[in-house]
Image (cartoon, rainbow, N blue to C red):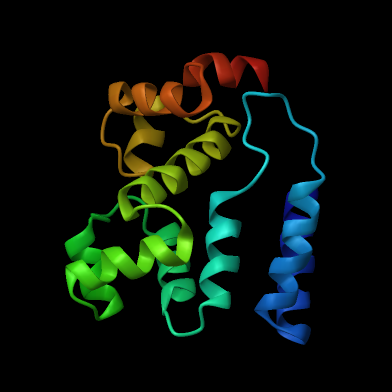
Length: 160
């Protein structure tokens, strides 16, 4: 659909003009989106990629891309620090400085944004929880409600 076309266009911009230009354009589109109050106005993934990109000394842009593709895996500080080639303490500090969020909060944001997308595809809650690494529908429900102020099933009904 439309989002696939936008993704393709951003990929072409990135190939021609670089990731910074693609992120700037993506950020522009997200900024002006009008959504209901319970939906986030900004994409945490996009904000972090933009922030991490401006902090050229950190390898977090690639790490964030990897995290997004592996949400079902263990994404705790020891695993992410090892992947980034940093000590746990150094990783925690640098990642938090670069993204504005602790690693745990950032990972939860990625997972819940993915859950929101998957809810629109009609997948069962158990399958969604497994795909995003929350393991159970109950954990997904609690985290989703904490972030978006409503149960995943209600979100699905409102956006069906």
